[in-house]
Image (cartoon, rainbow, N blue to C red):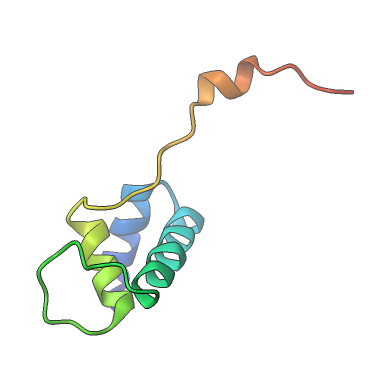
Length: 75
C-alpha cells in the first residue's frame, strides 16, 4: 500500500486512529456480506474499503467540538 495514499486518507477522515477504526468497521461489514459500494474487481476487503473511503462513499462523522466544550465537567 502506498504510504502517501494512507496519509491522504487519514487526513480525509480526521486522523490515523479514525482511519483504522473506519477500516476495521468496514472490512468487518464486508466479511459479513455487505455489498461493495464501489465498482471494482478487487477481492481484498482492505482494498475495497480504501476505495470506498477515497471515493467518499463511507466516512466517520467528525465530532462536534463546540458541543464537547459546553458539557459540564463532573467532579
